[in-house]
Image: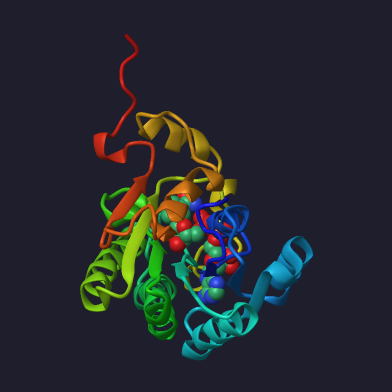
Length: 267
Ligand SMILES: NC(=O)c1ccc[n+]([C@@H]2O[C@H](COP(=O)([O-])OP(=O)(O)OC[C@H]3O[C@@H](n4cnc5c(N)ncnc54)[C@H](O)[C@@H]3O)[C@@H](O)[C@H]2O)c1
């Protein structure tokens, strides 16, 4: 018996990092199938090779209304219903502080990061709401320590992840009582999270930044950088109707203790 027996989920940005770990965990918890929205054919091939018929794959960009609608349709077509939407695809600004943002790129960087990180979640929610209302399901969005605190990126990324807090609250308010809407807010995690094309960072990966893991580990009381798998239990809990039926508009922080920043002294 798993916590998500016979449930059906849709995960965006599912072919790497946290989205891939959530997909694996949902299937391990008994999910009947997972729809996945992945950005390119390469990602689709990897998902097909690992999961076969247990995933329904849609290739597309989360900034596209049609791609989100197609992903919901493909999921329901393959598995008969939708219980949980996991909005997860995102880009990071690779610490593009105000000083580093050259004149002429600010608007483009803002639009690109907000389009992927905020509009992408809104479009997924819009596309999935009908199917989720039928099952009295839920939405879960991947937020960040940057949804609450400064210093985990530049102003563009931090503002985009703060905006997602508002999105969760408004959707939880509007969609109740049929649909619960919650978030998981990871802190620094070893993933290949990329940057925006508008900043020339589309091939830069967070996990390849020299010293990043140590810097994250030294910034939080728990003293380590997370692996994607470390967050997945929170998604399972929030998706589970039996274990969190009274929880909506909640954001579970999975960040090693950013709220009480810094390593404690060893006594
Ligand atoms: N890694 C961290 O330290 C960290 C910390 C806090 C929050 N997050 C958040 O976690 C989420 C997942 O990121 P990750 O760290 O697993 O990195 P990742 O790069 O492994 O996952 C992001 C996924 O989003 C997809 N994606 C990006 N733009 C897309 C687009 N326009 N259309 C379709 N798919 C697109 C990518 O292809 C990728 O599969 C993001 O929302 C990120 O902001 C990550």
